[in-house]
Amino acid sequence: MGIMSFIRGQLIEIIEWTDDSRDTISFRFEDNDAEIKRGAQLIVRESQVAQFVYLGEFGDTFGPGKHSLTTDNIPILTTLKSWKYGFESPFKADVYFVTTRLFTGNKWGTANPIMMRDQDFGIVRVRAFGTYDFRVSDPKLMLKEVAGSDHNFRLDEFTETMRSRIVSIFSDALASAKIPVLDVATRYQEVGEALLPLINPIIQAKYGIELTSFVLENVSVPAEVEQAIDKRSSMAAVGNLNDYVKFQMAQGMEKGGSAGGVATEMAVGLAMAQQIMQQQNSLQSTAPSGTPGVTVAGGVDPGRVGGGHAQDQPGST
Image 1 (cartoon, helix red, strand yellow):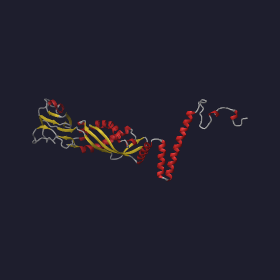
Image 2 (cartoon, rainbow, N blue to C red):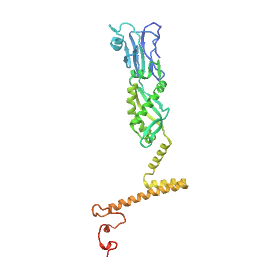
Image 3 (cartoon, rainbow, N blue to C red):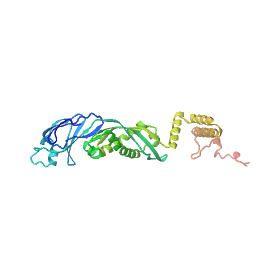
Image 4 (cartoon, helix red, strand yellow):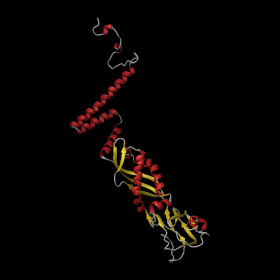
């Protein structure tokens, strides 16, 4: 709150704000309809910025320190008020204090599923939530687009105001990044780190807010995507085809009945296919060089292919 006592109608000599709440983003100084006198002291603490606003237009901005308000250090206000001879008379203006420190652990999440296009699953409904850290990087833009003329703009108001905006930007960034839904649903940290450089510039440009961290804590996907994730995890666990065959046979035995038989048949079929491919590769690599353009088939004597011996031809005499 403003630390100052004065009777209505007196001039303001000291302008300052001490934040005891730790969750206030911007605060409008309480002037009680009094005017600011020439030479008034403006005290701005660390992690604060003081922003003057006159009749809805942004005036001068002050960083941390003690400032004596004179014509020399309020050139924008001097122009706005059309002072011909500088700051000589008391004047009225709103003074907003904006907190520039880091606010951590703020929650975001999708109220409804967002639509995500995936090359494997088509259109997928995704729910997600997580946290983000931020600080005000452009006080004027933040006041204009987020806080407005709110007398005491607090963190809970900010998170509620920004929730849908962040989700919208998250959805667009996710689409432009073209990250597979399987990765979105399993690699939270990497996805959050990949999206931060896409989300932060938009947030800064639109709202004067810098995101220093963007974290995905959970992503919910449809059942068919979850099954694909489980399948991929199983494949990664078995490592190669032979182990996969054993894995599928074991899974089939556990299920029993026709399901077990089908799983076993599929596994055996895969194993046979692998053996045939290996045999063909082996024969092709060991076969002698013959007539160009002639392919030596497995199980056929190369000497009898295109040899032209009469005694080898059926019906020869």
